[in-house]
Length: 177
Image (tube, rainbow, N blue to C red):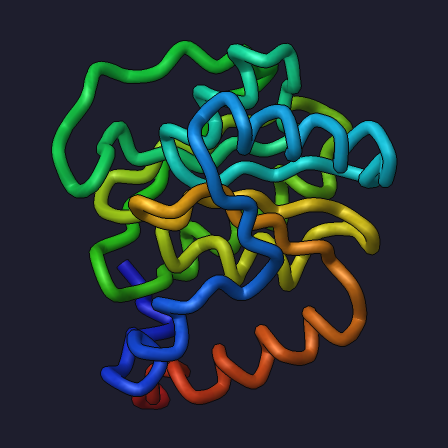
Protein backbone atom coordinates (compact mmCIF):
# COMPACT_ATOMS: atom_id res chain seq x y z
CA UNK A 1 0.00 0.00 0.00
CA UNK A 2 1.57 3.23 -1.17
CA UNK A 3 0.71 6.17 1.12
CA UNK A 4 0.88 9.51 -0.70
CA UNK A 5 -0.28 11.84 2.09
CA UNK A 6 -0.17 11.67 5.87
CA UNK A 7 -2.22 13.85 8.20
CA UNK A 8 -0.11 16.24 10.27
CA UNK A 9 -1.24 17.78 13.58
CA UNK A 10 -1.43 21.22 11.89
CA UNK A 11 -3.61 19.97 9.04
CA UNK A 12 -5.81 18.04 11.49
CA UNK A 13 -6.60 21.33 13.26
CA UNK A 14 -7.23 23.11 9.93
CA UNK A 15 -9.58 20.37 8.69
CA UNK A 16 -11.71 20.46 11.85
CA UNK A 17 -13.27 23.60 10.36
CA UNK A 18 -15.54 23.18 7.31
CA UNK A 19 -13.74 23.68 3.99
CA UNK A 20 -16.99 24.79 2.37
CA UNK A 21 -20.42 26.12 3.30
CA UNK A 22 -21.84 24.57 6.47
CA UNK A 23 -25.59 23.97 6.48
CA UNK A 24 -26.68 23.66 10.10
CA UNK A 25 -29.91 22.42 11.60
CA UNK A 26 -31.94 19.28 12.04
CA UNK A 27 -31.86 16.52 9.44
CA UNK A 28 -35.07 17.87 7.88
CA UNK A 29 -33.82 21.47 7.79
CA UNK A 30 -30.38 20.64 6.38
CA UNK A 31 -31.75 18.34 3.70
CA UNK A 32 -34.38 20.89 2.66
CA UNK A 33 -31.72 23.63 2.38
CA UNK A 34 -29.33 21.31 0.53
CA UNK A 35 -31.96 20.15 -1.96
CA UNK A 36 -32.90 23.79 -2.67
CA UNK A 37 -29.25 24.72 -3.26
CA UNK A 38 -28.81 21.74 -5.59
CA UNK A 39 -31.98 22.73 -7.49
CA UNK A 40 -30.83 26.37 -7.80
CA UNK A 41 -27.17 25.84 -8.65
CA UNK A 42 -27.45 22.63 -10.72
CA UNK A 43 -23.93 21.33 -9.93
CA UNK A 44 -22.10 19.50 -12.73
CA UNK A 45 -21.66 16.50 -10.40
CA UNK A 46 -22.47 15.54 -6.83
CA UNK A 47 -19.90 13.64 -4.81
CA UNK A 48 -20.71 12.45 -1.30
CA UNK A 49 -18.07 11.51 1.25
CA UNK A 50 -19.35 9.66 4.28
CA UNK A 51 -22.01 7.09 5.01
CA UNK A 52 -24.67 9.35 6.55
CA UNK A 53 -24.44 12.04 3.87
CA UNK A 54 -24.60 9.38 1.14
CA UNK A 55 -27.58 7.72 2.85
CA UNK A 56 -29.40 11.03 3.34
CA UNK A 57 -28.92 12.00 -0.30
CA UNK A 58 -30.18 8.68 -1.67
CA UNK A 59 -33.18 8.73 0.69
CA UNK A 60 -34.02 12.14 -0.82
CA UNK A 61 -33.72 10.83 -4.39
CA UNK A 62 -30.35 12.44 -5.12
CA UNK A 63 -27.98 9.89 -6.63
CA UNK A 64 -24.37 11.03 -6.27
CA UNK A 65 -22.09 10.43 -9.25
CA UNK A 66 -19.58 9.23 -6.67
CA UNK A 67 -20.29 8.05 -3.12
CA UNK A 68 -17.28 7.34 -0.88
CA UNK A 69 -18.17 5.32 2.23
CA UNK A 70 -16.41 3.20 4.85
CA UNK A 71 -19.42 1.48 6.49
CA UNK A 72 -18.80 3.47 9.65
CA UNK A 73 -20.49 6.42 11.36
CA UNK A 74 -18.47 8.31 13.97
CA UNK A 75 -15.87 5.51 13.74
CA UNK A 76 -18.44 2.84 14.66
CA UNK A 77 -19.21 0.01 12.24
CA UNK A 78 -22.67 0.12 10.70
CA UNK A 79 -24.64 -2.08 8.36
CA UNK A 80 -23.68 -1.08 4.78
CA UNK A 81 -25.97 1.59 3.39
CA UNK A 82 -27.74 0.63 0.17
CA UNK A 83 -26.56 3.15 -2.41
CA UNK A 84 -27.41 2.49 -6.04
CA UNK A 85 -24.27 2.41 -8.14
CA UNK A 86 -23.35 1.04 -11.53
CA UNK A 87 -19.90 0.15 -10.26
CA UNK A 88 -18.46 -0.57 -6.81
CA UNK A 89 -14.74 -0.22 -6.10
CA UNK A 90 -12.97 -1.38 -2.94
CA UNK A 91 -9.86 0.43 -1.69
CA UNK A 92 -7.62 0.41 1.35
CA UNK A 93 -7.00 3.75 3.02
CA UNK A 94 -5.79 3.77 6.63
CA UNK A 95 -6.91 6.46 9.11
CA UNK A 96 -4.91 9.70 8.85
CA UNK A 97 -3.61 8.89 5.37
CA UNK A 98 -4.41 8.98 1.68
CA UNK A 99 -3.26 6.04 -0.44
CA UNK A 100 -2.37 5.97 -4.11
CA UNK A 101 -5.04 3.27 -4.53
CA UNK A 102 -7.76 5.60 -3.19
CA UNK A 103 -6.60 8.53 -5.36
CA UNK A 104 -6.59 6.34 -8.48
CA UNK A 105 -10.09 5.01 -7.69
CA UNK A 106 -11.48 8.54 -7.23
CA UNK A 107 -9.84 9.77 -10.45
CA UNK A 108 -11.25 6.82 -12.38
CA UNK A 109 -14.74 7.24 -10.91
CA UNK A 110 -14.84 10.94 -11.76
CA UNK A 111 -13.66 10.31 -15.34
CA UNK A 112 -16.36 7.70 -15.95
CA UNK A 113 -19.93 8.54 -16.83
CA UNK A 114 -21.20 6.00 -14.32
CA UNK A 115 -22.49 6.19 -10.76
CA UNK A 116 -19.69 4.75 -8.65
CA UNK A 117 -19.52 3.73 -5.02
CA UNK A 118 -16.09 3.46 -3.41
CA UNK A 119 -16.03 1.37 -0.26
CA UNK A 120 -13.01 2.17 1.87
CA UNK A 121 -11.32 -0.35 4.13
CA UNK A 122 -10.02 2.13 6.69
CA UNK A 123 -11.20 5.74 6.73
CA UNK A 124 -12.70 7.96 4.06
CA UNK A 125 -12.63 11.42 5.71
CA UNK A 126 -9.45 12.74 4.09
CA UNK A 127 -10.61 11.59 0.66
CA UNK A 128 -12.85 14.67 0.54
CA UNK A 129 -9.75 16.65 -0.45
CA UNK A 130 -8.95 14.26 -3.31
CA UNK A 131 -12.57 14.42 -4.52
CA UNK A 132 -12.40 18.24 -4.58
CA UNK A 133 -9.06 18.19 -6.37
CA UNK A 134 -10.28 15.93 -9.21
CA UNK A 135 -13.98 16.80 -9.45
CA UNK A 136 -15.25 18.76 -12.44
CA UNK A 137 -15.72 22.55 -12.13
CA UNK A 138 -18.92 23.55 -10.33
CA UNK A 139 -19.38 20.13 -8.74
CA UNK A 140 -20.52 19.80 -5.16
CA UNK A 141 -18.50 17.64 -2.79
CA UNK A 142 -20.65 16.98 0.26
CA UNK A 143 -19.61 15.66 3.66
CA UNK A 144 -20.94 15.64 7.19
CA UNK A 145 -19.67 17.97 9.91
CA UNK A 146 -20.13 15.93 13.10
CA UNK A 147 -22.93 17.21 15.35
CA UNK A 148 -23.39 20.29 13.13
CA UNK A 149 -24.72 19.52 9.66
CA UNK A 150 -23.65 19.10 6.05
CA UNK A 151 -20.79 20.87 4.29
CA UNK A 152 -21.04 21.81 0.60
CA UNK A 153 -17.72 22.33 -1.12
CA UNK A 154 -18.32 24.01 -4.48
CA UNK A 155 -15.47 23.03 -6.77
CA UNK A 156 -13.78 26.12 -8.19
CA UNK A 157 -10.20 26.83 -9.33
CA UNK A 158 -9.67 28.68 -6.02
CA UNK A 159 -10.94 25.74 -3.95
CA UNK A 160 -8.73 23.32 -5.92
CA UNK A 161 -5.72 25.58 -5.25
CA UNK A 162 -6.56 25.74 -1.53
CA UNK A 163 -6.81 21.93 -1.34
CA UNK A 164 -3.62 21.53 -3.34
CA UNK A 165 -1.76 23.67 -0.78
CA UNK A 166 -3.15 21.59 2.11
CA UNK A 167 -2.08 18.38 0.38
CA UNK A 168 1.45 19.72 -0.22
CA UNK A 169 1.87 20.06 3.54
CA UNK A 170 0.77 16.42 3.93
CA UNK A 171 2.95 14.89 1.23
CA UNK A 172 4.70 11.77 2.40
CA UNK A 173 8.37 11.73 1.45
CA UNK A 174 9.06 8.54 -0.49
CA UNK A 175 12.45 6.98 -0.93
CA UNK A 176 13.55 6.50 -4.51
CA UNK A 177 14.24 2.92 -5.51
